[in-house]
Amino acid sequence: MLKLSIITINYNDIQGLQKTVESVVKQSSKDFEYIVIDGGSADGSAEYLFSQNENLSYWVSEPDKGIYNAMNKGILQASGDYLLFLNSGDVLIDDKEIISKIVLNLNCPGVYYAPIYLMKSNLVENKIEYPANLDERFLFTNTICQQAVIYHKSLFCESIFDEKLKYISDWKMHFSLFKRKTKFIHLNIPFAIYDLDGLTSKGETKYTSHKERLKTQFLDFFLEFLKYYGTNRKVLFRLLKLFIKGT
Image (cartoon, rainbow, N blue to C red; front, side, top):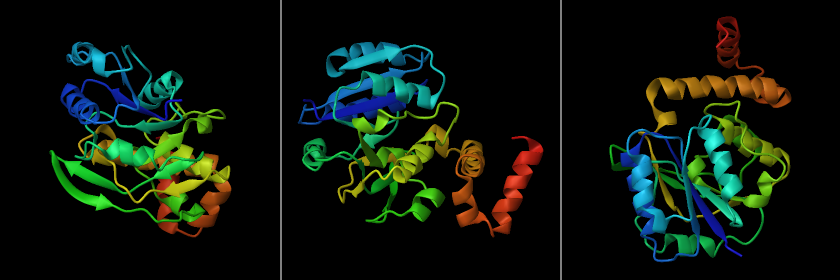
């Protein structure tokens, strides 16, 4: 059975899309499928995907309901045992063998996570390292970059990404999986570069995603919220302001 499905979502970012697709299709190993979900872009993305048809296992260009709706569409189309999400602008590291190296380490159900490089204006800025052993506190108060994660597809049998959330459904998914006693397996092999020019990394959007996460932590994980933020006056004041403003 096919071991890996790579899924890219895109909306009106043809330059980022081209960069991502090129980094995937140049892999020397073809032992993976490549799925692209475009949200009905009007910038030539669909035409570009048509030109890449022979390099793609599946692609569609149609309106969607946001980031996580598009990701869930990709999950439904995937036939691999493991899923890797690379959004438009994100790329695999410059190593034509990186997929072959990663696939060799995927051998049990769980969430695999690895260090990841950050890129801004096409320049690699730094590298994020995650603890070799994750605990509840880390996963509640921090975020693992989506592009640094590979999921066993069976994990999506019980739930998919929460489409009511606009920016932080991946954080919620990771914490929920941890609470379900899912294995989190550290891979000390970086395989992706995260584009800081992407949607959820930009100024106001990044601030809005922080607000969304704080409200989700309080409403969906109240006991953990009390455990880790219950005496933090700054966090409690921020939360109170959010509810007063109704945002």
